[in-house]
Length: 437
Image 1 (cartoon, helix red, strand yellow):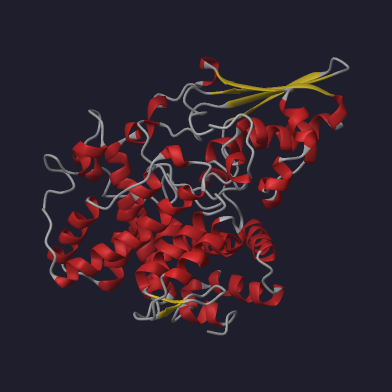
Image 2: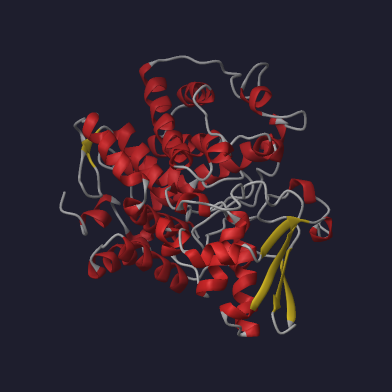
């Protein structure tokens, strides 16, 4: 399963090179040139490993198409892979070693996230940044085989570096949360190895990470529960997003496509679209009338309007041009969306479920001729229980590669190598097949 997630993540990272933030990253690198690590993506900047980790992870989060770990809750794999790619030129990392470090990183991030609880996210912290740093830290520590004292210091240092606010959803800064987590994890490791000290109680002690970032319901001791197994990658598992936007919008988008297939309506026949979401599921959908593609990723109203118009979702759905269409404005007038207690479902731990997994979504489409049909979607496409197949991951990977204008043969070579990570002796050989660096 790790190989699937990592392959998916690399594909999304490639597509990130064509995102809105990519030119900003390149301009920043122009101002802050370093030497040492050659980036694997054009324009092939020479940069230090910490900046490389920041760049890779930021690109991996740029189009909101990366994985979802509900226990965190967040998107850790771009952070983990970004940090490990930046280290790969100086430390030989085989495919099995990459998988091993990835699994450990997921485990640590999930356990810390579970200890913090959803209150951490609900009060405005973006756990991808605040908790994802520990995922990358654990993965790096695993590859470097750090001793306990050094790793303890690194975790203590990282506690003072964690950052990320949900208010920046729908902006370029949101992707930076992943980048900063990867870079800060690498910085914390380097400082700890150089001898910088930190409190051994920085994570769980008084005035430490858990008390400062948590809520009264947070419990550091909860991070130790379930360590006897199964591994988090197996249970509850990791979701791979089918659509390139906010995770809680995935179910209503699938519902829209399901109803369109069932009712076979034309756009002009739609009278209205009504969406009911479970309580708390719309907290990240902060734009009712987005004006940019980035804002559209966090707009439930927009994704329903766009799906009704286009009958499909692709990377182009979230371009500025797609958002500014006059047809979108007209369709938005027909869309209503609200949270409703009837969508809670019967899960006993509803309040502990993430916005994209709690309860169910109900979508109703009413046509001008009076026909009306509703559908309920309980599980997101790409959820571990109905995970993407290798074929679906390949289609997503090649779509991402095509968006980045990567030669089809090169892209297929990378995908094939990533899908056989168990046989890879050095992961740098994978991307060097496609890039002359």
